[in-house]
Amino acid sequence: MFSGKLDDGSEKGLKGHFREDYSLRTRVGLAPRAGHVDRQAPYKRIATEEAWTFPDLVKAQVAYLESGAAPADDSLKMAGLFAHMPSLQEMLQDLGSLRIGHMDEFGIDRQLLLLTAPGVQVVKPGDGTALARQANDIAAEACRNHPDRFSALAAFDPRDVAGSVKEIERAMGTLGLNGAVLNSHFQGHYIDEQDYRPILEAIEAMDGALYIHPTAPFNAPHYETRGFFGALAGFPHDVWLHTMGLIFSGAFDRFPKLRLVIGHMGECLPLHLYRFDWMQGNADGRSHLRGGTQPKLNHPVSYYFRNNVWITTSGVGWEPAIRFCHEVLGPDRVLYAMDYPYQQSYDELAAYDRMNFTPEVKKMLMEDNARAVFRITG
Ligand code: MN
Image 1 (tube, protein in one colour):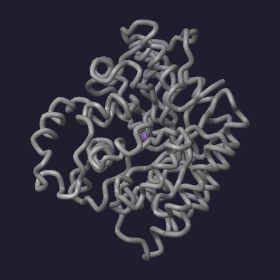
Image 2 (cartoon, protein in one colour; image 1 turned 30 degrees about the vertical axis):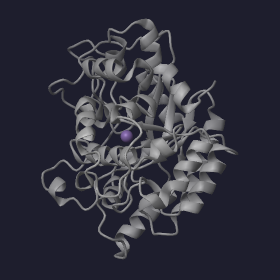
Image 3 (cartoon, protein in one colour; image 1 turned 90 degrees about the vertical axis):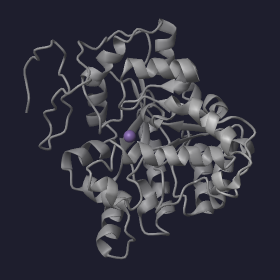
Image 4 (cartoon, protein in one colour; image 1 turned 180 degrees about the vertical axis):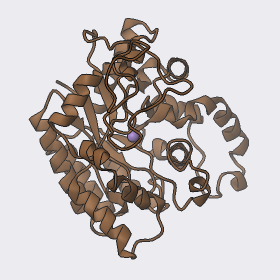
């Protein structure tokens, strides 16, 4: 274990709480090189993409993976990988003093809890909704036990459409959860497909936000053999597909009040808005360029990013990227997230503290936007 003062004067550097063999992280490239966290910041820090899981789900994932009955699914395989990392599991499964201790050390006031990828959508078909119900009960209990520290999104298994609608209504209604989370594709399916429309309708009707969180792309050995099925390529690419799929399916024309949240600085999409609009104009009316069946949209692609999409900064505590997204999307559309426990460091909040935004915009980034999008009070 690392101990002692760091040369650069920061509190504890990039070291997080993993005990696996990579626990000592080295500073590479643009990794934050910062100082102490401001313990008297004039805003609450709400981290909006913070992962958790529970033992019954991990067991169900591993049992299905090892049964030989599961289809080839890199997303399920990823669950098997995570299941064999003891300190990761310890952090994911704790919704009490261990997690809150880490939040205090890092400078996080509140976590928005998301059932971690790949969630309930990879278990044996038919078992997902019961596990989602269990997940939502556990998350709601954590929020009741620590009302000033936790909020949570509802899990659901999209393969069970009727069950998902019922569970989203229960979780956001009776349990008071703050939206819903989908861990991107499910065995190569996406929620923009027509069968899943009732789920979008239910989320909009409940005034919820849908957070689409990445998972490993479906059956993608070309990612895996190159060493970047995760955050280096596979994750953002899959959420890119999901987001563009929703836009081009006309989902936001049909459900104009639906709020979509995507992490990791909008999975790189905001950088392309100009080209998206250009190419949408090029493709409209040419069925061979628009999949044959996709409807003509009511608005340019950029409109949906400015009206239906919010982004979080999970894992990208990088001022130039945040500044760009403020400019093209608006400062009200960018929310802070840490991505605990996967990407955790003492220096991240210190780096945010030093970003050169006005006090008003800084407070929007760290607190106000999260409250608005996820209806967080208290
Ligand atoms: Mn994450």
